[in-house]
Image (cartoon, rainbow, N blue to C red; front, top):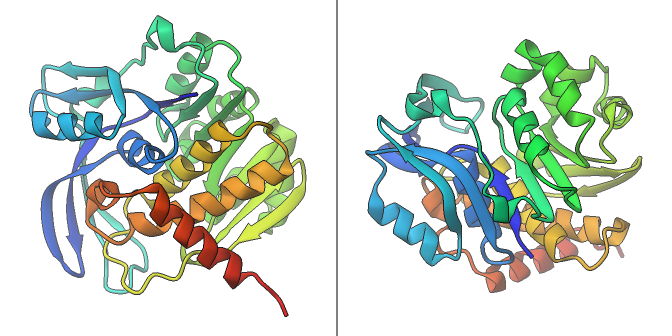
Length: 300
């Protein structure tokens, strides 16, 4: 069992209420794979520059993450800088330097083209389509996206989403993408575009899962102190698909369990700076937080 993940690996500069941090480990593929690693094997396709720390690559491999598909190209690694206000109400992007990621064209190793679970991170729809052209009928495939692609590449994004089983969006994105007046109407419209699974992430307010129109909600794990919310959505997807990959059957019960795992995993991502917050994630901790979530939704 293995998950193929295609996305970015990055070095981030973060201005947080707790301080400023430079060259922090980031990127959608990084957060996803570290989040999934305690439960599933990940195969990563990405590109980094010559400046990407060799020690960091060794640490990722030590977590069981297969980086055979990561190209190290001449140039600088994708570099993003963001600032969060106190209370984490919004986020300001200070700069984005694509570096070698500007020329990224994913090539899936032949031995990985039969991966049974595929996640396409927040990259251009054109690149997501290129990956789908290379894989052989995965049991479950899903994409993440963002407002930039929804606004500027709507037609290409609609073409990609018709080819996958699941889509991850936040509540603002589902409204922007569909033009719906409510999240629930937007979920229905996304289903009509093709995917039978729609996951709507709402941060501290939990998440919705719609499986062919059957709706499930999971709350977020209460976290005493949020340090850095960067990458929490990618970690959520990593937790979800790690549970999907392990499930003997892809039925409603398995997907509801995956939603709980996703919420549990994402709660760890916000408790430290950058993707390193997930470096010590273990299966035991995930199960403890799954139990917390179950207690939160118990009724008398």
